[in-house]
Image (cartoon, rainbow, N blue to C red; front, side, top):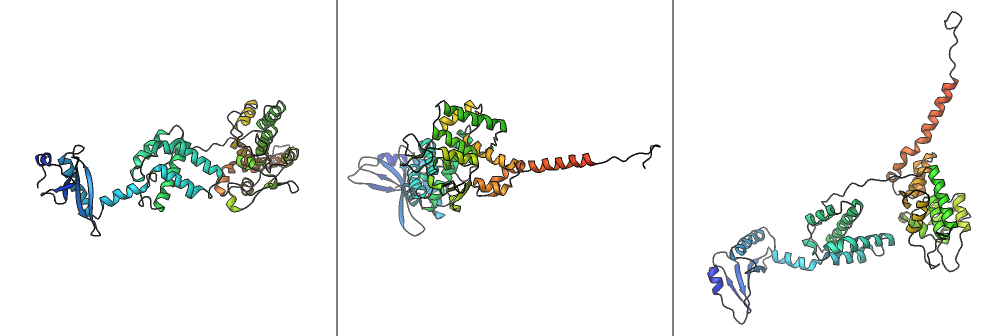
Length: 398
């Protein structure tokens, strides 16, 4: 039968499905269900010779002309080796972005990533990725959609880039796990925003204000003993926040004046030794120890480690008039002080646990300061020692 608008309207229902094939476009037809639903379809052999059927859409959602045009397009793809029915089946099997997120966290992150990394990933998933893309099937998520969402977060470029990076990593794993064909990562071609590296270093006067603020806030009972100790140790050691909050007494070697961290950002490289100066040692020696907890910096329950230092830090920096200083800036300032004192960059990198010299290179201009000062001093000495030639009575050099 030649499928026309008239012939479609005249088709009657039966007790079971019937398929009417078009005489003009071979392999194109319409399925009529007992309830009267009419669906356009194509029948073809794939590149392996297997007979397949693929539904194009229902009459009413599509006109006959639209269905015929789509059938011609699909037959062209089939000639080139594609298989629309198999592709549709793969899409159904591929799962959603929400399902991929769970698999990524369970199968990739759990047991491999640090707790802080897992928490950061989960926050990005709950806050951004799952609410926006959770119900999308993996092949449905386009680069354009990801790019538009990335652009919508432009006011917070750091978050925008973290979302983009996590999506890229998740879809890369989806390809490895066979949930998505190769080269289908919708985030791979999108460029992250340029992030400005902020280098905020404390001056000697600001250090004095900071130490004074910690002491005053602790004296007034506005921050606790362990909160004050945590801030002091961050200032005096250059450690990361997580390294101090998760510090255990077994890692404290007061006899040899050092911390031995076996849980840190670069723990793949082994134990990280942090030298303790006299002030840092005094902080640890005066700190109250608990017989029931292995942790140095205790939380409210007196057993678990402290998990958040933001509120006490906010009080201290407000008292010190350092409202633009973040906790991590204490680490930068520690490195800055070392560089300004002439400590070589390689040693600074070791103190901070940097995994690459490039990370420490931000302090290169500061480490040059003592050299510049020495050169100036030498120049002044030479200038002062230079004796002018004496002139004789006739104004001529003797």
